[in-house]
Image 1 (cartoon, rainbow, N blue to C red):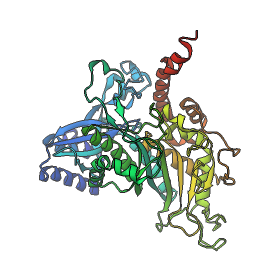
Image 2: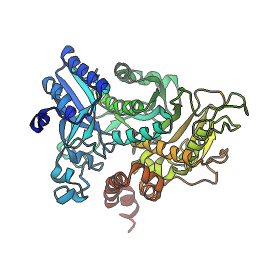
Image 3: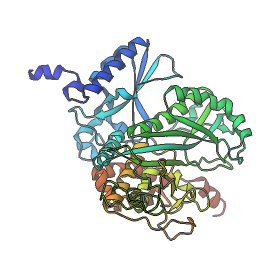
Image 4: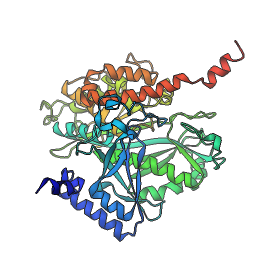
Length: 503
């Protein structure tokens, strides 16, 4: 094949971005677009904040883009939470030695055919999650889905798959005034004015559920139609606060599910005059913070067993757990693998908080005796500890529930931080120490009190920096510090109230 012929081949084929199975799946997507009579397909990717960006193509162009890729301005990967680009991209090297981003050049999105969905709330519309590549076929190092895929590969090399279940709290409000006044525009614009759907403080109340059921029903059927493994819908303690619980998945699946769930929830409810917010602690009277409780375990690739579950009988002779083959199981029912993984989560808790709680607002949740952790502790079925151990000896559902996350976190970065932290604990055979019966009094490292403090801990955590790569850490910290700088430059309501009349 001549060089000219090679250049004429579609981008995906030219760079070998799909194997035979993936190529067959992509062909099926193209056929399904035709067979379903779709008119539009949304090509999206998850940016650094876990927000979906992309383009919507008419059906004929969507079929072409499945093979040719789709150009998208690369600055979407360089923006802080206000959508301001954090680097001077119109300078040589885009301000950070990268010719690929110079001049706000394009990256190419390539759809993952396994993620294709029909959107129940958008007639004749399809949806596909994409990965980002440079024009020469190299993966973009700041594509968060790719960052997570690299962490999964590290874990697979150690003999395990990552299994995750999601418990996500969020708020739902009625929008008072759907009209957006011109003066509300800005960078960012004004949030909507909202009203409560209930007054809260009736945890798991059936009456409160019935009050919300008409709104919840707007979500339930579409989420199930998307194939999301919805298990339960629960009334949380705070006003207008609910929790959706999803069944566990392996690898990319639960992270992709979280991205789709958040986006679908906001879009569906907005069409009906409601505002869903995954912000941790909205500024509303009587509000309760929302958390994201991450249930995680490892699955042994050799036989599919839960690598965290200990022996049914304490002290029973068992085969090794995959790292050292020592056959020892802790008397509390956790395997060696689980114990070391847990120790890694605790050791890197302060640094990993930058990914689990990536917003300034999220750190307002870490308060004593609040059902949210304030320090790096663990305990058996203890909701005050950072890591709640569930199950144990002989229980195939044994898992570690990390309660540090906020629902606004990017799942790919959050999950990757857990894997890298846990693997370090396994590699160095770290020990978690005793459980914390008094989690808010235990002599353990305090969690960061601010995003800036978390970023400082991340900067100093040599193991996590090496695992993610210095380039990724520098990129992430630049974006987050741009967010902090804007926050610190603004006069808050507290300052105005405290000082304006006094001085």
